[in-house]
Amino acid sequence: MKIGALASSLRKPLPETLKRFAKMGLQGVQILTSPEYLVHSDARLREIRNLCADAGLEISAVCGDIAHTHFGVTDEWKDRVELHKRVVDVAVKLGTRVITTHIGVVPGDKNDPVYPILVKAIREAAEYSHEKGAFFAIETGPENAEILHDFIVDVDSKGLGVNLDPANLRMVSCVDPAHAVDVLGKFIVHTHAKDGVNVYPGLAAATYGMRNADGSFRVFQEKRAEFKEVPLGQGQVPWDVYLAALKRAGFDGFLTIERECGDDPEGDIALAYSFLKSKIS
Picture: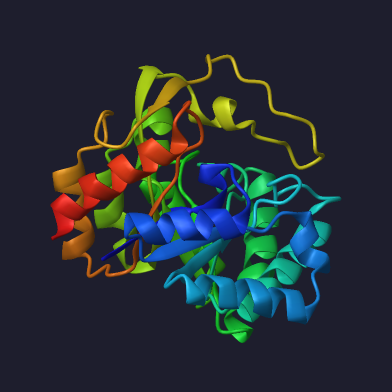
């Protein structure tokens, strides 16, 4: 397994971020494809690709969370799929094969009106990814591993995979990340290395904001889950067991450090790198 980090976690311009990541000893970088990436010229994308290569960093993936992240809305899913296709084109030009994205909440009930819309939308997006030699990697979090597994099977596309975020599972859904690896292992193409603590084990779907097929937000009686993200190794992710599960599943891709809060992102990323390196060496 290799160790990288999400460029946006450092909160600095990309050239400076790449230099600092290289100095830390990281092997890869994930790039957040903000809207301006969609209008970059091919020359500019080559420039970014070369900047990463010159720093000795592989682009492990791009994050495609642009605009809203719900693919299961009747009047929106086609536009969301077209946006995904544009992100795929950018990713391929940057030289990576993985596009990670939140897709909304997969209903546990296959008779839910949102479910068939999600299946249709994700299948089209994943098939386009496959045609381009890439993977559409669904980020874990809103649902348990069994629901996501069955959904991926129903979509039935070689271009669909999983970006497994153990912290999302543990701090929001209260799901054991190692168990999730056992269930989803063959679909995992990328991971986020993040940690957190669940403060209140409420409903993950309410936390993420589940939408109905008509676009309205679903109202739940249950309270939303509450959580706190913390530096790697200081939360509830069982790293030894989790990493052993990834190894058992045959995963040899990137552990991409993600830090979404905190006053010292550079220090937290460096700490996370040292922590992970000690675990996989």
